[in-house]
Each structure stands twice: as C-alpha cells, then as structure tokens.
Amino acid sequence: MSAKRVTTNEELKAAFAIRKEVFVKEQGVPLEDEFDQFDTLNGLCEHIVVHYNEQPVGTGRIRFIDGVGKLERICILEPYRKYGLGKMIIKTLEEIAEERGASQVKLHGQTQAEGFYKNLDYRTSSPIFMEDGIPHVLMIKELSSKS
Image 1 (cartoon, rainbow, N blue to C red):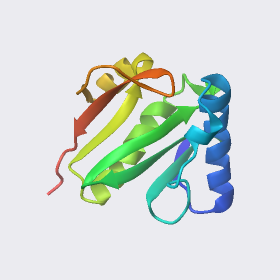
Image 2: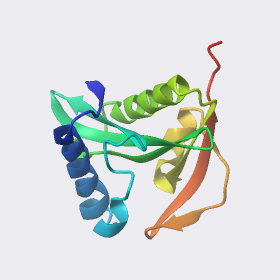
Image 3: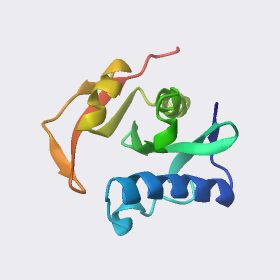
C-alpha cells in the first residue's frame, strides 16, 4: 500500500477513473458535477492516488481556501475499502496541508462516512446538507503545529 502525489497526466487519468467508478457509477453523481476546473495539474489543488498491490484503487485531492485545506473527492474502489486506505488518503492530504502551512482542514463528508472521519479527529460543524442528492456534513480538524 502506498500513497503518491499525482504528477503526470497518466496518474491523473487513474484518479479520474476511480472517481468515475465510485461517484458516478456507484453513487449516481452526474458526470458533469464530478469534474471541475480544479481537475488539472496546474497547481490549483493537489491530487493523490493510493495503490494496493501496485494498482491505483483510491484517490483524493486538496485545495486551499483562505489558508484552510479542503479535502475533496476522497474515494476508494469498493473491493479495497477494508484495508485502511481511506486513513492513508486522509493522512497524506493532511501532510500536504501542513507542508503548505495550513493549521486546519475541512471536508464535506457523506453522512455514511461521518464516523470514519470522527475516528480521525474531525468534528461535525454543520447540520446535514445535500450535495448531488447525497447527505453531507461539514467536518473540521485542527492540525498539530510542528513549530
């Protein structure tokens, strides 16, 4: 198992294929809602891919809004969801946030994953809201300062 920052178009395409499988095919998110202007290698955000047995099976991205890291598009292909890869994705994105000087990260977590995020020290900071027909909550985590 490994997490890698996306640096090539081939790696980005692998991330997109995972997202399309999970969000579009499995969860019914409209294709036009899944991909946006941040889905490039132009530095607007940073993408990662996690591998299991050298196969890309999970992904996530982080972008920065007013100094806060926003974790987005976190997903893992269904057969690989019991190997701790979600935790690896979150940890890697949090490390990127700390490298960039962010002291806080946030995400819109699907309510079915709220317990997973709480176990990683995120706190729920909003009532339930809908995104693409799926219930979500805003979750926030303070990052430890390494100074």
